[in-house]
Length: 247
Length: 244
Ligand SMILES: Nc1ncnc2c1ncn2[C@@H]1O[C@H](COP(=O)(O)OP(=O)(O)OP(=O)(O)O)[C@@H](O)[C@H]1O
Ligand SMILES: [Mg+2]
Image 1 (cartoon, chains in turn blue, orange):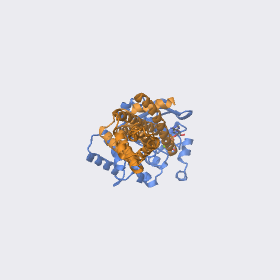
Image 2 (cartoon, helix red, strand yellow):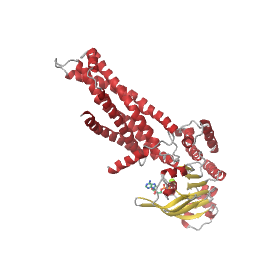
Image 3 (tube, chains in turn yellow, purple):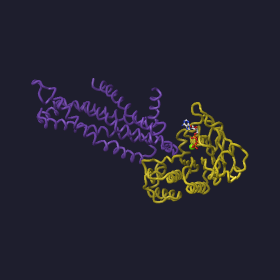
Image 4 (tube, chains in turn orange, red):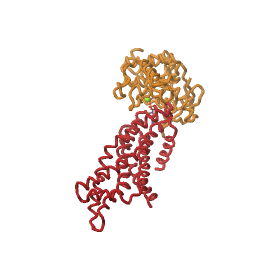
């Protein structure tokens, strides 16, 4: 379980997050939704410790990450996988080396054992025989899937995904949602997903938090979200023609 | 300015930590030996041979008194190349070639969040990215400079042979005369300091890149400018310290 207590974060004068408190449960897909620029990425980076918060704290199963030294943080980070919005694959490596990297860095496995794990992870994201492709040779969807494979290569206890399916066709987007939801249940991971895709929300939203203007505006699950009378959330949910018709 | 120096010092403290994994570090070091060393051999050779030839011709041109033996051309060429041309000029060239490469490589990793990805994994990005480059350059640049000196002296010999201003025999007599091992030591000390400047300053510029691809270009320009200026500055300081 990951808990965020009263997180506030500003860059210079502009206040991005204002007193956000949230908790995310194990084995569930926790979604953070909100329009573009509402602070989803910033919140995620605060939670993993890439940004220092101005106020508040983040606890991983009771361990306060905000107060830790680099060494202590490193122990938690070995249990943590993150999928960046842009993939953030290492472009001097090919696909196999990218996924193998955390294994080489933190395990004493032999090359064969590592390769087996790499191929397992690749298979898990429905990719095969791409081991020797360079990152520049991948399509957008493949990049995301390789990035997921890298994020899960060390069997993380905590998985952060920043817009795992933005920019993908609806079918691939679905495949990735399903995939994340499956591994979350299978390995009992605490998964947090940033998204503004209503499909994902209705598909895998076990626990949904709606950010609006840097504040936590609404919280609930995928059935509740369709019945809410919160105006800003309704504007967000029923913004597209498709969802309007659904209503 | 003060802020930059502070951040530079902090980055260096982060960099000089024990590598997270020895075997990975060795692999990276080998790669850097190739990228920073072997890949620079061509340009170092070309510049050195021409530089040596020009220095020899200019020296011969300037010595026209019958009282000075022609072997002085060999001696002067050697001193110029060993003391100044090879260590300083070649280091400046490498600042352009290697510095821009390092700054843009690391800058791109910064803006595409690869450095954040390293940190998330629990890797110390400064040490992982910079330590192999700095170590490799500090080891391989002295080798490059020795090669440059040898090729430069050969260039001078070639110039004598072709122009006939001095006989190659006189040139070689000069080359071998009045030799002080300390000059080589001085050249290598300079080279090591310059190698550290080039890699650490360029790494710093790349590491703190903010923004997009335009800023990566700006960082790589800054890397070349600042490391060149620092090389010139430290050339003066070291010369004052070691030769006076
Ligand atoms: N490093 C930074 N420095 C200054 N401002 C920043 C920085 N990162 C983000 N911001 C600002 O914070 C706000 C929230 O950005 P954030 O990236 O969290 O949005 P988001 O909700 O992830 O949007 P999207 O859905 O488009 O990814 C934006 O207004 C952005 O300009
Ligand atoms: Mg975002």
